[in-house]
Amino acid sequence: MDSTEIEKKAEAIKNEGNKFYKENKLKLAIEKYDEAVQTLPEGHIRRAVFLCNKSMCSLKLEEPGQALIDAEEAIKVNPKNIKAYYRKAIAEYALNRLKEAINSLKEITITLKVKSNKDVNAKLKLLKKLQKERSFLKAIEYEDETDQLNPLSMNVPSDYQGPKLNEDQPISFDWLMDMIDYLKNQKKIHKKFVWMMILRMIAILDSEPNLNFIKVQDGYEAKEITAGFKPTSKDTTHQIYKYKSYDDVRYTLPKITVCGDIHGITLFIFFEIHFINF
Image (cartoon, rainbow, N blue to C red):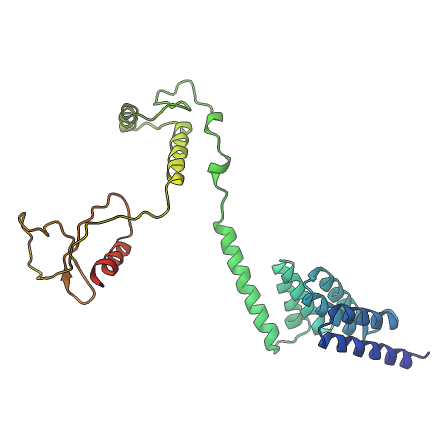
């Protein structure tokens, strides 16, 4: 059988593979594409096409490892095959090799000098954006020191004169006052005891729910009042919270005193939803 007949036979087998591919019979398609590859002599340029087809089937079967192998083999056979680099990039991305995927697409735009392919350019832009996002996330991530920390293993210098805290010792009011007096003298508490306090606070906060509901007295009615309104001690609504809404109308609301740091805007929105818009 001469080379022309061999090539025709390989193409016929490849067409059988194409038929299986269109019918979504991907395993059978791979078998035919592989048979077509083996029909041609090693190094034949058409093998790259059949290998690219195999690679595509593997990608659809969610087998990126095999897809990458076939794409790389196709590039060896024909270093100018655009589809081979494209398949390689997709497989690398599926394998979470973002940097390699970008480089494979760059091979198309730089090495092969194909800069007008809209699909390639769109994918390259997307992958670069993902790379920036990953770099940002990596830059801000940190290992929580409290997960690894054991304050009890820390050594306290023998000359330390500040307040100390034992493992099972409760933090009393007197202990706190002693600590405050110590700090007033511009002295520092040893980090062992600082961490012990922090870990105790974390344990308390972890035991609390993330969201707490506060029940206010029923019966309050939102009333429009003038800017010069001043409640008296005899007024049943003297404990009110006054604020200016977006339409420049003032209302009386139940007074809630919050100790600590909160987001005031969120509090105002809560009031507006639950006390104004009813």
